[in-house]
Length: 316
Image (cartoon, rainbow, N blue to C red):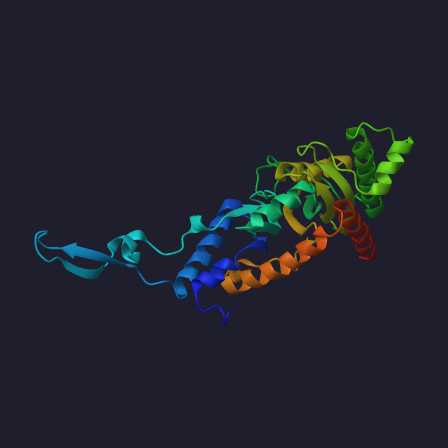
């Protein structure tokens, strides 16, 4: 940052992908506004160009005119506002995270908006940790809702949960081929499976590629799910459905996104680090990861991640 003597140089470097950690309880639009406001404030504190002067010609036109240079109010910061404003920076996110969801949020700045759209077109996998509590059911399926039912949960065993996770994953794997209109017993289905993960044709149909219980400490549990086309209410209903399948009540206590494609939670910037220095460093790191991803077909990248992620969860 010491080499960035002027705001123009810093602004030209704000092109690419930045990985942020979105806190729970904050809307994504609020996170976007906080990020852009902090960046523009620091850009304005850097060495900005001085106000431009204007040439004033006065006097009688029949005589010699007076020519002088005066400061222009049309370019004065006190009149037109700061040099950099939030609308000067283009900013879009890859996928919408609900208010209750925390974790990895991938955002494109300026020219990085094209990179974000390329990521969206590849339909990358997202990995979530769903925290739930057994024995309680709320009206909105989240812990902050009105409690409508309480029940027993001491009969729930780990083997029952693992069996349920396998059933959910198997049903969704079968659903992949159904959405592709392919019979699972045909050569076409085998050829599709060898090419990588099968993506649904519609972006509105959620599909689970992997699900596993990584922690069970009654009444609390944590489910790790690899999913695509998800949304907040779907993840809440998934926890609710798990409770029903286990013959008891369940409600979600937290939703955390730990991975978006190859962008992990270790790369995500906390809100206290949403400043110019850390953002520029994060853009350089994320752009490097994006270039490595773009050299490979999307299905190979996702398949290798999915296999490595399954090995990691099995060790845990």
